[in-house]
Image 1: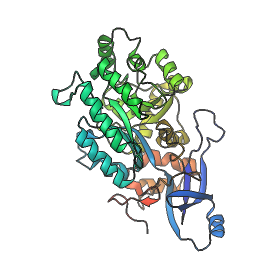
Image 2 (image 1 turned 120 degrees about the horizontal axis):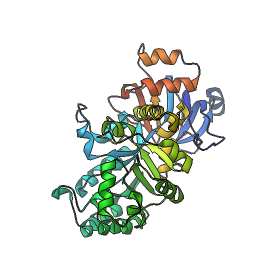
Image 3 (image 1 turned 135 degrees about the vertical axis):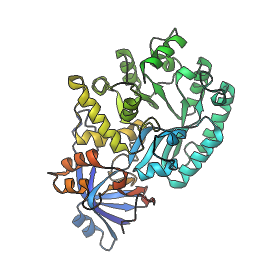
Image 4 (image 1 turned 135 degrees about the horizontal axis):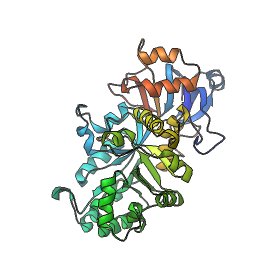
Length: 407
């Protein structure tokens, strides 16, 4: 067992739903055994109850749940302008991401490599082979029969192996025929997850309308194949109709909001208020490589900016809501809310220690914070991956150049 002494901060409730438990939870220590949080409270209380257990001090910052990225592209890390070529999974960890829904590769051998590497690191990774049979380069296309065989094989070998899970992944209905979407439905029947793109930009929506003349709207291209469920996560949804929002809520599907990507591509301003008012679950995604990097707090800050730009139509976001979007909301969207997303007793110890360098702008700001919520706001405004001082995945500290050992 190990006692971690820190300013522990999380959001055990849903601050968008009037949840009475949605206020920022704050404690001074966690007791971790075999990768699971066994107790939480003041340092004095935990030391008194467990005398002799080692104490790891994580001073000078905040200890928050591991970030949950609900939309990030595995092959596109190299496409980030000027960001170099970091190895994909190490890039996630160095940014504090411990769980992710990863938009995979069109090639089954690449998916084997991703799953194997993620399994070695103990990360919560949900991913799958990207399926397309039209509108893309010929080398990225496959027949529904080939996609079914390759995906079924990957599911058999990787789904529910440790912390790995499989997601059926048509790139979008624009590049997937009705026959390919029927194949997706067959695979979804195996108890796996589903992810794709939805209503990202107006040109895409117009093309989908032409390709599916009988569809009521973009979401209907998925819905009529049984692909809109509580295990479905759709990226973007910048331009939804009222009918689509109603359907998403009725089926319990989730949306991955990717603000940096939406801004970089000029896709539009995400209508968060409309989603919340319809009861649609929303989490954050970095959408690398259209997004500018895998650091989820930066996405939270961009989400805040977008809502400010929307004026009265926007939803003014608080630091508590930003933390929720970056952690527990993603865990709930991925069906992992009983395991990760907050630091409650019984959850896996997936955590990020955010501690700025001495004399940095963030360090000065944290010293002048009025309270923990104010400190959290300053972290979202100023933190970078360089401020990730430590990352734990189910109780094991993950080493990387960006996360020096605190001991």
